Image 1: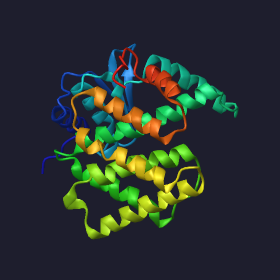
Image 2: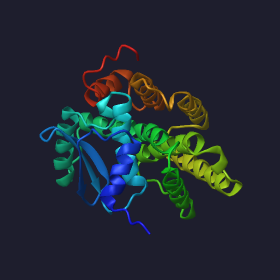
Image 3: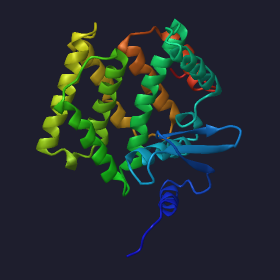
Length: 264
């Protein structure tokens, strides 16, 4: 029996994603995350366990998507946002309320990440040996319905709705939508929508609009044009109507610097 080391498995993943030429440092941590290190001129991937799992593939998938679309900000946090994140971290550590500008940045950035994650999964798991890891992730997510949903944070719950609507409908393969799994999906989406409606101004009609817009994901999930993804995210955030278009554009310029936004 041939035993493959963790490092050897990483090299196989890098080859699968055509990342052999990329500088990627792996660091043991208490989270799964990735970002670009300006000082080292290298990607950094943090991982918890030395095992190949969904979370590790997903983080590498961000780098893969960024390289495939030649758009680093699907994997790289801009310098402006890193600075704002430090401000937010310091204020939260002191248990102080965030000023409106920082709260807007934090909330809108979360929505951006939720949706980019779905594009990452579509590109990273659909046509390779790692799809079974994605399927395990879906089933772990569906186990949430055993305990039901509790209202915590509106943006977090709505972000979860958007993410899982896209994952369940468009990234999960049709052959894996068994009767049992589909029943759980229907309950998951129904109950999550219900708790959001009961604790916000969002209505069933608004969710119909959101779903209709989300369905466009299936047409562009494998796009090679980053503008398609940015425009899709922009339109979803604009549709939920928590912020006006001017504020969203302003924040997008921080998230995706050096980008011409005339296409949205």
